[in-house]
Length: 385
Image 1: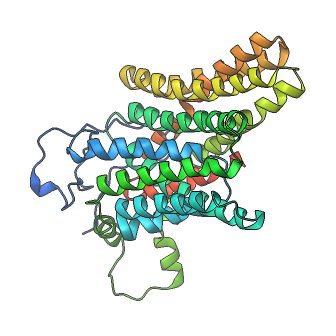
Image 2: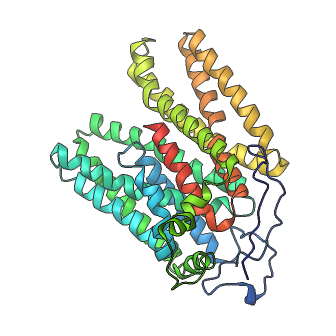
Image 3: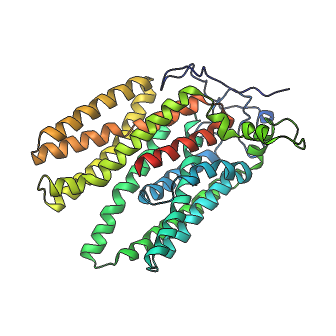
């Protein structure tokens, strides 16, 4: 007997769910749970951030993890790990993702702090990007499938923005005022990654890979039956996640969005200094305001969107305001207006990525979340390079 999954019409427009799944109640029969406390997919209910109790610590651990992921933003080697995350999650569970992802961070940052030769540094950045990809895809999929996901995704990505905003400020301050060498900054990153691995592995210790294996095996006819390479290919969850036409619209949206977000964050300092003649300190503040606005927008608008149930209107309004802010930035060269336009652009860019991931989670069956969201953030990473 084949298993059934909550499904939505693949023709559903972008960011519009066919129906809103009901939230999980506080009392859930023990028979409907797996050993590690996660809900069976046949139950049309969603986990809550505070039920079961272990989820409180898991959510907090993922928030801190995204500070480290955000601080590491822009490193190399960010495509393969998002797709690899699906395989790691299937065999080792969220505990394995937590251990491997944060473990790669520790190794990469501790190695960078030793001032290695440039070719070695490139390989180290690949390792750091591998850790980022594993954690990014796994926590996006887990949080995105929860009840009240707009609020939680806004906070999760807000912590990413916090890490991305604080990292350059701290690094610049230590190098310019304390006389640190660039590689000494990675001692701080290694310390943060150590806290990351302790919190994540502790919180997700019971989230083993057996649960995900059972879900995957339930979709394959006969565990010991020989199959052709075509059957193996089409049984791949990555291939299955590509069979939903509307998900491609979201993939394209995330690809373009990530390019805009990273380009603005990475080049606005240089543009303001060279083209607008802005003092470097002021340009640095403007860059911080952009990332700070991104963080604040994700948190505040995530709560507003969830409370008013206006996901699609939030996205449409945010895109229009971003266009207006960009036009204002291009046409008005006065310094104060440039900073204001930058702040508006960051604030209203903020909620777009979390809402896109939530829409993708609504469109895909649960067993395809890791694979589908892994592809989405991989394309987003490509758009940001």
